[in-house]
Image (tube, rainbow, N blue to C red; front, side, top):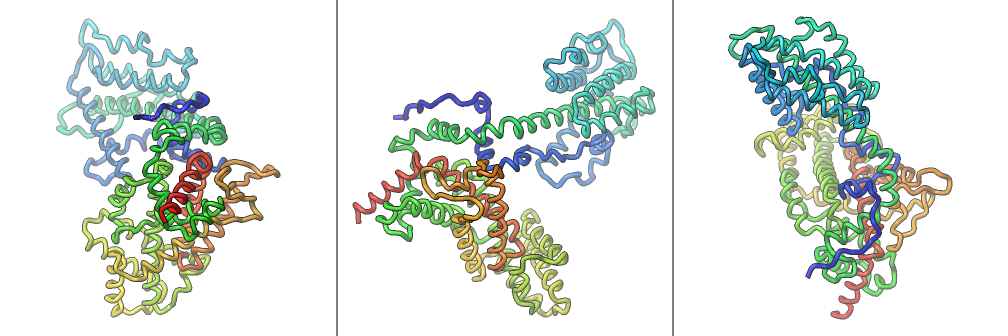
Length: 563
């Protein structure tokens, strides 16, 4: 029988519509880094009208302007929409009204601007339904009108919309809108036209250019209004919502967990979590009696054995391109208390796998070049080695190249390039041996991988319990959680304790990774290690005293009674 919903105090109104994933992300983010919560960085380039129009007017067979697959799909769909709407307009030389699809697009621009100023009724008349000019263009007239004249009548309305937008955008965003107004304010056919080729070369080029200008202008202003809307949403999230959620979101997560999985007091709540607890208790280096009497040891076993050994470093597939399928397998058995950490887990696993295999390849390159592994343990890399590092990372990430053979060839070329950088006298005769070792690494058949994986695991185990007493006083208890997880809490001096901890933590982690032969990836690994530590620490904060501690004690007592 389903458990009743827990009775808890009502949440802050701003959290009611906030996705739980966002609440969790805020809790994991230091206040000094709230700027990273934006879906897209505030530094996103604001396109000019010409830049925005380019992809719609260029060669349709040209390479896409972005390498991101999702962006390529969106760009293709926008171009298809533009072409379809343009052809709809150009199918008629005269009409009694603008095509309905174009009017709908104009009204979408109006709605996008209105959404920015719901209380500014003085600006609502722009592109408003009862606007006489637009109403006259949208409603059937008594007689046909040249389509060119109908389109020319839209231009002043677009310029008015652009002027309204400049009052609402930030100063940097508004620069391109001001440039748009300045360039097209004369209203001449030359200034209100874009060069676009007719697919059949059988229509009026001037009319097509004007129609393309109107359609693209409407799409452009809508796009800019939506960018402005996202800026406002990001600003509110970073400056208003995030600080409040950061302080009160723990109760929200606990409440939603119980609504989703059952009450903490219910013996059927969290079956996957219970299995996980039993597993890491049974693999604990401590006796059951030691765990029963020491809360700090229970936290240690949870973090080092349960989190690092059984979740982060669960035996991976030999080929890194199989990561996605393996991730799906892990998700099926993911403890409920970690259900919101799947993305962080995948990122950490991706970075560590890349680092283990990349460092193994770099080690073979060093040995082939006869330089030893000194560079793999140095704190800083030369610009030349940084360049080779990027080439190797790119080659190892290029899973879509077409085949395993091509993939291995690309990685081998990067490894050989690294060897030549280390030793310009590297002999071509040694390439075959290095290619063979590269293939063995990529197929998971090289014994060096197991050695480096073990080193990596050891560093993560150590760093999850890192206790810089000179930075912040950490109290490892299930009642309060480790203080390093009290994200955003401040010490007595007013300095953000967590921000200071993060700096010290990453410096210490980077040093450990470099000393163990991972200098090519030390910075990325230090950040991944910090992510992993914050994630499991937040789990202790959320569920330690109210749920997890009892499960661990029960598992110890159960094992004692059956032994």
